[in-house]
Length: 259
Ligand code: ADP
Ligand code: MG
Image (cartoon, rainbow, N blue to C red; front, side, top):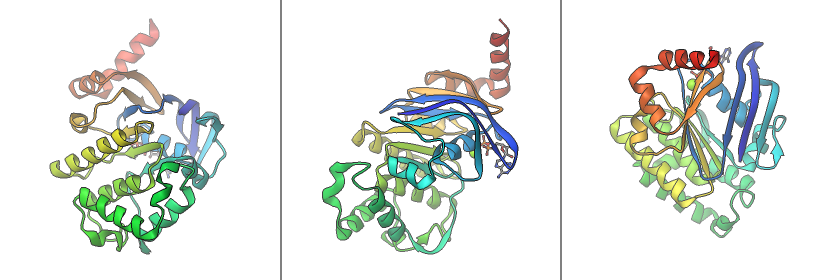
């Protein structure tokens, strides 16, 4: 579904991604871990098509298309969704209106089975249902997007957007940071439910902590350091990272490289 091959990317002339490669197949849950500043959010933004990031070389494919040069809206229409690490506040634009427009422009392309739920009233009641699942009040969908939301509410609002748009590829950038234990459980449960009811959709979960993996079982775990994915493995890799820390994992990889 998603293929990143030897991606090199920069922002404001500063090289951040230095040859990142990653393959995600339909229905898989991948976890991306790594120290602060290693380039995890940059990779997420590059996949979503943030215009400030420049791909210097390498290939980015989604399903059958090469998407290196596609604008973010076109990537969203293909079914790529990014939940931001730091969601922006957009005063004056309600959550409902944003999602209705976004849903309208992606509808049918992402998931034709949902076409029958196309009416505004049904969409509104769907959103209210999602808000309830996330323990957010009904008024959330009428409020300005993220304006005045607490840290935890912003994260849940990102998940609500995922539920409403039904993307094929869900990228969650530190969805667990700023959430308390209850919030973490609510968000993780919603993601798990989403993957169950959309078995062809894939998740790329960026996190610092193995704690969310109590609820979500990854198929693959990757470690990013200095703009590259230096190690990939199964779920137990996340446990090793917690025990050893990134620096030690990094040294091990250098050791293997030398052999
Ligand atoms: P991570 O998500 O792994 O913590 P990021 O991708 O956010 O890492 O950042 C990687 C590096 O890119 C950091 O050194 C950061 O300072 C730098 N960086 C990120 N965004 C910008 C920007 N807008 N301008 C300049 N440097 C940036
Ligand atoms: Mg980040």
